[in-house]
Image (cartoon, rainbow over all chains, first blue to last red; front, side, top):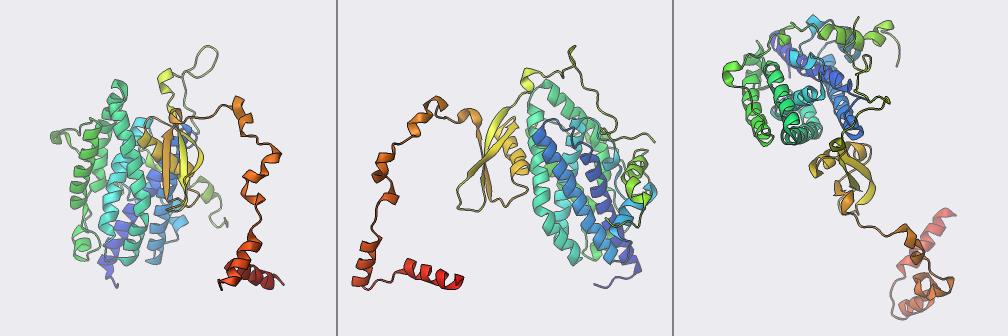
Length: 256
Length: 139
């Protein structure tokens, strides 16, 4: 498909935002490797983190084919202001309740996002969306299982999960910050938009949270943590990027 | 630069006076035996155990521990406590005396009679033909 300049910008912005989310949450979740609550969960959570890194690589490759720099350069050399991830994914891992809740809220949005994208007119993206389906399905099953279990296990676990949900909810709403190109993307049948996504997401997570006896904060308290998509980030992103790119920037031309 | 990576800033775990980590009894979960099926229709084969709080979680954790590096069609989990086993003290009951080979299929010679029957009734000896073919190939 041939895009005019504005259309191309719109598509690239969408791809950057998706891949940056995946790269950053993948990196954050991988910080649990070796520290997970039990061995089996450590393996599972690390594997999920690796899946996200792999997915971001594919999207960066797609960006490369649209004229952007190569994936390593994109991932390791940009500063925080060039990242289009939502602020939710850049927050430190906190305790395991926060990391689980974040992965729950984020994975559900990914599942719906890629269901929507599997019919995208951007054929390469649609192909990737169909390819990720199984991986993301597992990520959702994994976090649903934990949310239900810990929501019901005992008073302490329920209280922790509820406070993790309260703490993450406004951040999670930041996932759905609408793009200025939403109209173009919708018209081009590339992506239906964040509103549709958010509504479906709310419906899905509510069902699971109810089974874990957990409650979404009242709508009057919703203050979405926007602006990440515009390049405005929390103090936590730049140190993460410095650390992630530390080895790469020693010798950017090295062959691995 | 201060790192946010807990691998760098090791978490401080509570400890007893002897320096060992505190672990409450309810933090010890049950184990589940994991059975792996490679292809639909194959037998499920025992591959190991996982610790989990419930069967659903056991399946989720078994998927990454035992399913991610090999072809997998299906997994089973069974609570270890639900498995009944023989006693190693009674292992001698599996020993059979060498004089009882008549109880084993390999002790019966009947191929010559089968071939004779096949020839008499014009039935193709497919096994023999296959053997001849592979022998010809290897030459």
